[in-house]
Image 1: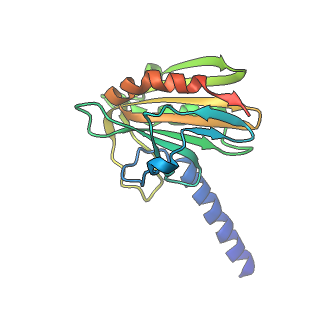
Image 2: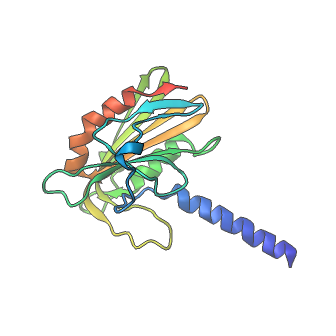
Length: 197
């Protein structure tokens, strides 16, 4: 009986970990950090970065998020965009596995995979190797079996993987295509602030 309970507990922990790794959907309604406590920069033993003051700091919606920002929508879009920052010390999966998973969350308007319509670029910023993916289409966020998330047409994601000395950091900008396009330059400027801690 003890062995069964131990096995069940381990399986639940594994399932929760997998669920959290998939927690990438743009969510609304999270409490914002008040202006007197707003922080637009982050410093850790492995990576430093500074976010533009126009980005609205939010309380991360899950424990695996190190930071979360809301980027206000443009006229005509129904939702704001979201920039989520993830770091999993010593884990997080390979660059290729994450790119495949993110691209796999999008389909073209005809329902076919968006892989051949995605763009992947590699950069070196301040000695940090970056892989950036840009993909558009219908966004099918994976939030686990309990989700009621619906496909979101007309979405775009620009996501970057920064390979720091202490492991990969993930920066994922997702939202309606028009809004993401508005903030694309701001996101690129943000990536230029990345520095090894």
